[in-house]
Length: 605
View 1 (spheres, rainbow, N blue to C red):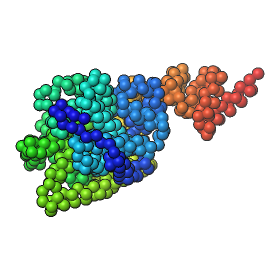
View 2: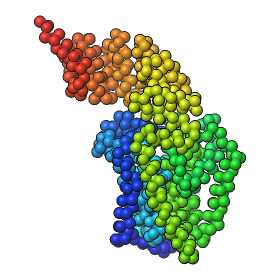
View 3: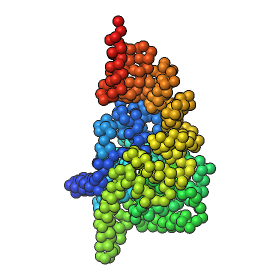
View 4: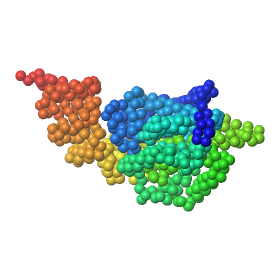
């Protein structure tokens, strides 16, 4: 196959390529072994899967429509939602199987990366080395091992399929083939909007290795792709801004963002070559001075590397292309538009490091053209790096076996990590280790006193231990910092109701429902409070609302039966008790209520 100027692309077929692809898959699965025994974590996996009623229902028509309409998790990525729903339909809530899906997608990405690079360059071993680095690098563990980051591996699959479709289009420029490029790209953008830089990377490949026509003439053919990228940017910003995920300039100034961007670019590069102290969350520094030595040093390093790569562009174009790939694909997530509280994230390197790996692989190959000693050194360095990286990656995968080791490792790898303290507390709380949870929440609030989630979680801990006044205080502090916090309203209502303060509890439940109409917990609790205050008809309405959202809740059927029985609607009450027992045969309260009602009916003349 030839490109515009006659550059011949290889056809990666034959036994050698097949064996290499099999080896890639085997090495990837072996390096990430152990993921199959890992479960979901408390950080974001709940919002994506375990506490998301739409996803937990599996793949169905209503869920399909919701996936395209929702901005949940501060993103519009319907293809990612459908992927999670498909997993639930196939595997239920078996976290190990969900992990296996992500791992297989990652292995497929490595294979595709090899095949596409080999096709464009004809360089078998250099392409293979890039693919192996991609498959087993420790910085990629987060994208593969975090179920909530399915969007990374899934969107990259579509990125590579878009590139494959583009190369096919260059072979025969038909409208149908161009449409296939657009379809793959659209699916990728709907999996994760980070693909907005994909048209830019096609331009890079036009320069090298495809060596097509001069750059100005190549923009026009990609204009539809750039338009799709612009539309995705607009949608993403609107959704993230609407969800409150975009930090204001008052909270994080542009100077601080620019300083953090310089440091992050350099830090990612440093962790590429020395992947130590990796963390699921890197706290944003309190203050960053644009003219401090760390920032200035990072800036000088990046400028020197950029200038050097461009000056060597004629002799070694792969250096410039790889470096520009790294800089360009990281740009959407480098923090100039700050989303969330992290300074950087390992997952953001999933695609950008492809450029660095290309520069390394082709650079080592150029070194190998020198003396025999240099050649042996280059080959030895390449061969030794893979098992070392695989060992570090496997160790990093081990931290993802559960919340406690994961967040303990994060605390050991970083400082002042308020989020890791909070999530370690959540893990302890889930295990019933309430005192340890309180200690972690308290430390999180010491570091970040305005952290609403930690106030909320501390409120839950105090409520569990019966310290209602302290729980109410923590929930109220959480709501001062984050007024639109439906869970805090709901749980504040619960503590107020337990304290006998039904009127303010009812108000809190109503606020929770107003903020999150799709959550079944608040209307159920509101029904209980209304029933306890003697407002039986209103209680029935709320129980029915809760059951419309979650029909499988046996307690709601039982309590609805109680309300119906209070109104003398005995046949309906019997039906609700029977439904409760069908769902939960061991629910003794429903069994006792049904027996009492049947005995009362039998005594009637």
